[in-house]
Length: 159
Image (cartoon, rainbow, N blue to C red; front, side):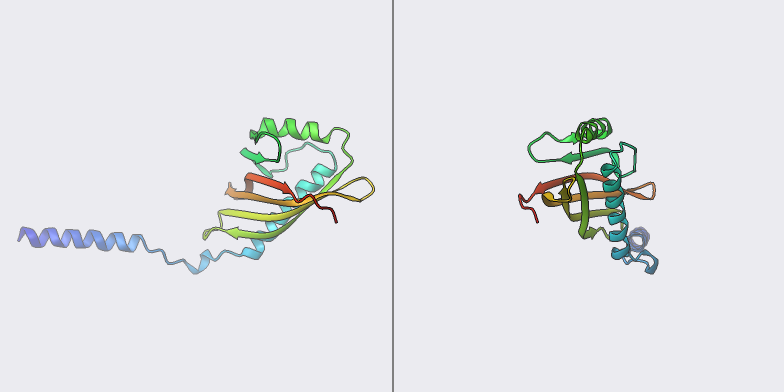
């Protein structure tokens, strides 16, 4: 009798576990990759416009704990270091930058996005002086995507 009760309790527990671990996606959980790519490109456009205007205002692109990896320099870690980097970079700068989102790789729940893109820097005469590629990792925090990690690499070519 005890064995039957134990078996029933174990089977009920396993059944509950299987039901709670159902990994089938709800139809409402569909991730719209095209829309996410559009959102990420809009963030890139806003960042470029702010940078090109020589502004240091908060645009919500980076998370407070973001880390950026550039070539030939130590990582830029956190909000204060990012502000100081941009402040020094914008001094007497007449170059403009543009970003193009090429691909996005989105987690199944849409909360994490890896972006692969292309950048171009032009001088005041609109002549390209640097081009390259970048990768940015975004997380959705408080309902908005913020960049948590990014890195870029110049391809050494100009168009």
